Length: 500
Image (cartoon, rainbow, N blue to C red; front, top):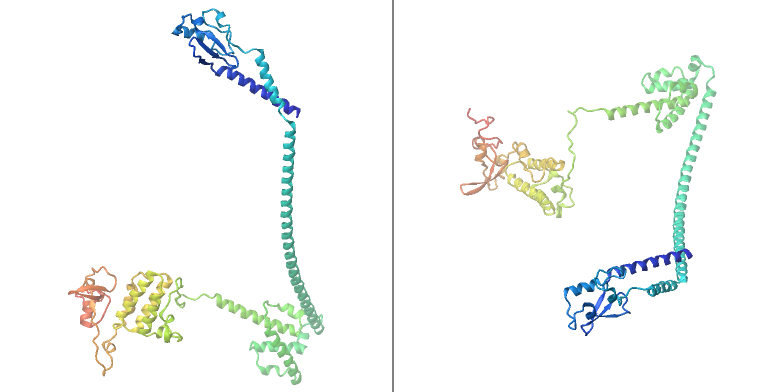
């Protein structure tokens, strides 16, 4: 605290001294004239002391008191309006006795300044600093307490999370441990069973045996004959000479039971023949044979699966990227509950189902494309076979589903090859003999198509003799002479009526 106060006192002294110097350098002398023009009140830096100077005595101009340029210079050069910091510099040529009334700061004024500074230092209170420091310490303590509380709360939450994770890990560990124990128990039981089988097999077979011992064992011979019989290598009469009737019946019944058991099991590995002879009994040999059979069957199945087919045999399967609705799935009213196939649709059912799709269609392109296709099929209904029109519709739907075409595309690519060979005869177009004969609508051909100058790629509307007609891209010569609608121009070399 002592060091702090000393530093504060020195700083205040420096500030006061700088203020005094700047005040002496910057401030100007304030001058006010009294009602008497001959006298002037000059207020130097200390306004408490006022001195009056007679202009007549200074300028020696008489009673008029008129100032001239020389008298004004004398006033400024006399030192009255000069700063107190330079009182000894006087440039006037007049006697210095005339300027004896000017005021300069004396020692008393400096004492007053010191008193003011000391009074400011006396007003400084150390107790206030102590209070502030105490309050600051309390605030810091409270802040630390709050931080500790928040930290303890975070630690508690973290502890809860860790405990929950630990419980889950324990449960998982117990479950996995139980599974491992169960697996180990099953393995042990299987090992015990296999050891028992091996021991029973060893009791039947000598430790040092030869081929004669194997041939003398009736059970082994029975098993071998059964196996050979399965492979159709021997007949049934060959085994009757070596076995008696009673033994064969009893042994065959036992072996048949073992067969049923072994066939029900699924074996994945092929047992070796050496293991069968040295470590297995008759039942083990039977199991090994069934295992070998299952192994060969699995190999055949894998071979069949991995067998590559020729491209001439594989059927065409297009992937469906954009599934489309078909008319038979959208029929309503009396057709809603009937399972009608697409191939069995009649014309009125097709139109009804297609209109249901168009009404509920959200895409404008699909709606316009379906309307155009329905209009075209309606026009072609009297010209082409209905089954061919259904195939034409199905082919276009498949192209849209596979992404080859869009609804905004033209159907001329598949229209001609699918419908050219399915033109209705005149007998099919007319009804029964007893009914009234209705003339089929005449087919109009496109004249520009005959010259290969038509801008359309398929059938379109054209004004002929002031009437709008729906013209087809068919050969005019074949249509007029043979009554056939063939999709080539009249100038094509493929036309039979082309004049070479």
